[in-house]
Image 1 (cartoon, one colour):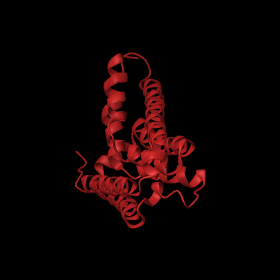
Image 2 (cartoon, helix red, strand yellow):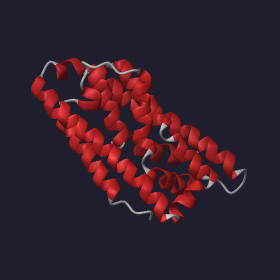
Image 3 (cartoon, helix red, strand yellow):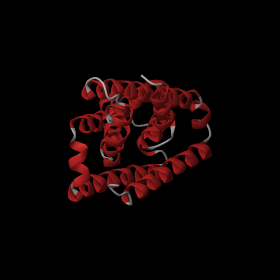
Image 4 (cartoon, one colour):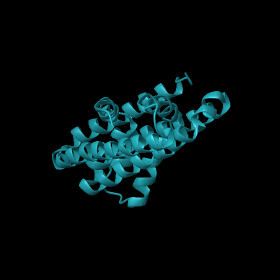
Length: 202
């Protein structure tokens, strides 16, 4: 496996997106355990996109404007819902630690964060084949590359989450800081929703 793939994967995963924002919010709201659980959920949310890319379903999604648009706008609506919840409750989905949420609920939301983004499928469809060698089974190579990508995603997200959980007490003791963190997260999710809304299949 080439170092170029590992470096590119790390850069892609480490670049903050919806999954990172969700994991950070869970960590700040509920600590280290929630950080790991949220990271797991977001990582699981990438699996359907990887499967779609490997099996060629991404080509269908790319060709069908209706399918792409439906999935895209469902994703936009969900991200806006998350942003609205954060703004409304001053902590929303993750930063409000007063209301307990089960691990399954945290994982479920994490899965949806990445699942409802059709650009991920198209990204993997374009990204993975670049690192498939001409010799050998393309499917097996893509499975190995996918496994590495998933592992890196989980490790990086957990690292983000644990770092945020470490400073959690300092944030929660400062109401103004927590309010601004909530607003920043909400605004970021809204911005990501806007970016997704104007995304094209190309």
